[in-house]
Structure formats: structure tokens, C-alpha cells
Length: 286
Image 1: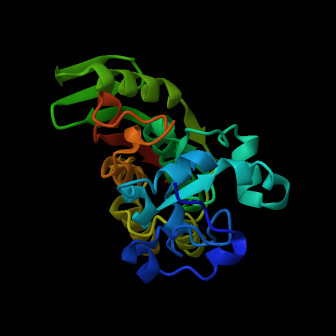
Image 2: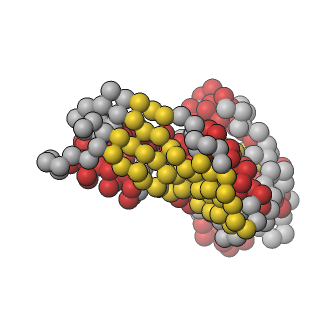
Image 3: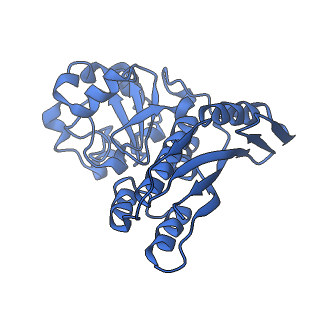
């Protein structure tokens, strides 16, 4: 069994050496830092023990070793570092620093993570909150979600947030549970005093939370830029899961369930690709 290079050796590693069969760790995968600074290199974090990481080099080296956006976090090293490493400290405080965990990066705040099994629900909620935050900056007086739609290849489930009613088509077990859960969590209305739109602050908000490419949010900002005929109400529908699905798709390409203690059962219904669409009513001062 190949051993893991020391911290000093890791700095000397090269992709060429790894591909040549020397079983050295690719510099992009295991640097001298426990967690890379570059967010794109840790969109998915797999927490493994040192023995499990060593096992990835036996016989046929695992595809995990050269998955560019997946970081293998050595649990045995990490538990000695959290107080000196802000990102590790954050994982520990959230109870995420455990062997076997597969963590998905928050697409709107890349130093935050949640469990793979919670990602679709949690990050859809996050995007809802960001939409409300954007509307506040644009001078809205109220923001409320009226409908949640969960769509997969085989089914569509629609939940009315106000009445709690659910309509469904096709095979809907997981989709229905997710729609019902989200509709309950979104039974709230944000009310603001209202005011003139701060378009500059709104654009900065989108940039800070990596939402500049969202067409619905961009449309809201643009319509508030012009003068004259002011908008006072908009009912909109937006995809709350598009960014989360991009990070989840990285996992879908890997057979993580075959690696050590990783708590992911790919191929099960919990990993189906689903789109979550929220319908929202936004009002502005007349």
C-alpha cells in the first residue's frame, strides 16, 4: 500500500509523476493546505480517514484522486487543525467534520457547506432568502412565496404555500416530501417599510452572492433602473435549485458510495436531479 507523502513532499508533487504511476498525490488535489483557498477546488468535500485515502491508491487508483472540483479532507489531520483554520473551524462548529461525510459547497457563500443529503433543500431556501434580500434593496414593501414546484424527469409536484394543498403527477414519493417540506418552511411574508430602490447596492448584493447570472433577479434590477412608470407589483417564478444542482452534479459523476465510509448512495432516489421553482409575489410602494 502506498503511503501519503509528507507535507514537505507534497510541495514537490506533479501531475506528470502521478500519471506516470508513481502513486504520488496530484498537486491540485492534495496541497500543503488542508483546505484549498480556491473555492472551485472544493465544491465537494469528501471527509475520509488517512487509511481510507491510502486505500484509494491500491491497484486501480480511484477517480477521486483527479476529480478537479472534489477535495479529499484528511480527517486525522483536520481534527488537529480546526482552531487554526477558519474553514475547518466552521465545519466543526456545524457538526460536519466527521468521517464519511460528503459536503456540498453553498453556491452563494463558498466557505459554507452542508451535508449532501440536505443540499437541495437548504440551498433552495438560501436562494429564497437572497431573493427577498434583493427585493428589500430595491424598495419592496412585501415579499411572499405562494407556490413551490418540484420537478424531476418522472414527475411534477406543486404545493400551494398558503393552503397547504398539493397536486402531483407521476412517481412522486421524494418530490412530494420535498415540496411539502419547502412549502412549510416558506410560510412567511417579509414586510418592509419600502423606499426608493438602491440599484447600485442591489447589483453589489448579486455579485457578492454569485447571482449575477440569474435572469429573474437581473430583470428585477433592470426594471427598477428606469424612471417614469413605476412597477408596484410583480408575480414571478424562479429556479431556486439551479446553482445547487451544479454542485450536486459533480457528485453524480463519481461512484462515491464505493469509497470507504462515505455516506452517499448514488443511484438511489435521494440523488435524482430535481428542479425547484418558487412562485413569489413582490409589492412595491405606489
